[in-house]
Length: 282
Ligand code: PAF
Image (cartoon, rainbow, N blue to C red):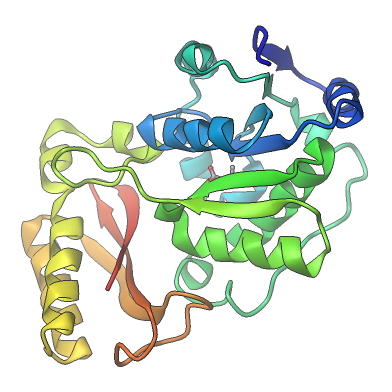
């Protein structure tokens, strides 16, 4: 079933592979990434291997989803290492498109999902979700995958891509996979490598504070009190800013004040000039 991983740079090559696979009735999965692969990405690759006959991993650092040019410059790019990390998984194709394969000259289309994009990350990173929605639509259509795997770490993004796939009748089923954490609880993220040694030691404080808030809310602490305590704990640990920490419905991300429906706490905070996000189920 799995030969050698093919490095694909153009959408034409990808289409040719995809046609062959459709012809032989094989189910195709795509795992979209921006590279700098870590165990979280590799867990998505494992899920894709279990769920489909053919697996495409994509690596494209998408300029349109960075609202801050510094953030784009700093974003780690490690394509050779990424290919080495993927080798043991026996994936079929590593699609690393050049920018013109995604945004050819004259490209003038923007995919914009309303509602779920408007708050949380959307409020703090203007244009971010348009960039994500546009590139993910392109990757779905270029790969014509039957199924796509995304991490719950970017929980709002997962909601956005689920929405766009349904709304645009794209026949790619979106599957969310649990966040993978370091031993000390820090959610795996490509941005973690940007943290200094001392900041790395502080970083898990956000997850600990969110877990404590979730326990408190489950135990009857009023939501605003639990979240305020969590915010204070994150700042006391050494984070410089908490952009948001909120309780939201698990589907649709509507503000929540009780546990009548499944909820999640979502947070974004700055540490050592690095913006970290996380979320936990309550
Ligand atoms: O989660 C990411 O790495 C990116 O937002 C994605 C989904 C690959 C789109 O560029």
